[in-house]
Image 1 (spheres, one colour):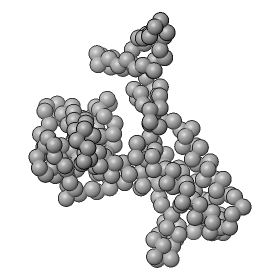
Image 2 (cartoon, rainbow, N blue to C red; image 1 turned 90 degrees about the horizontal axis):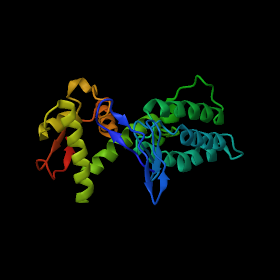
Image 3 (tube, rainbow, N blue to C red; image 1 turned 90 degrees about the vertical axis):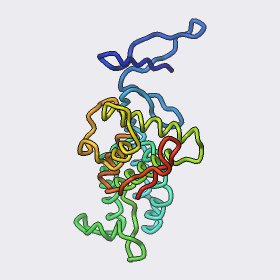
Image 4 (spheres, rainbow, N blue to C red; image 1 turned 135 degrees about the vertical axis):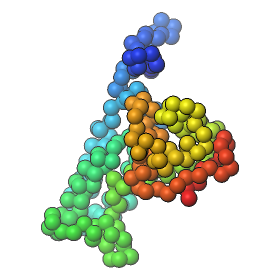
Length: 237
């Protein structure tokens, strides 16, 4: 599989033919994707909604199975929600997509508990110590997982991983502000202090922009780098 991207206007993929031993290699066009380590990659790849539909279908099957009501809910929390972790951490779907999954599961859980559709959601999502079900909210979990994953990449004990993550972050911020990013610029970016949180460049690293936007929405407190970059390990304050 090949992917030829040109930075010359119009920026995008080029239909270039590559071959090995006279065998033509398949190439990706814009919006196409190829899975690498389970993550769809490409240039502006369209989300693989089939995988999300498959997960939602599993949730439906568990919710409508012949298990006892408490067993259905336990199965959802034990098997389904952990399966959401990978697509959440790799930012494969938007928060609005996970909100649709939440609405579907919420309806099924209420039916399992013989609750009316208009019943309060606090009983479903409240903490178990308060006598509630303790069902995770997928939309919120997706934001938390994305922020946590990005933080772990930048602060990884593996120098190669942390260096690559920091390089990608620095490149994104530099493109955003149109000059070489300083430590302070990177900290401002992560806390959403740049440009009122609004991304202006279509082709910036989507992961970094997602992390910045998510951090703003969640109200993640200020980030600082100690010791100074490079080779630093930013920590939330």
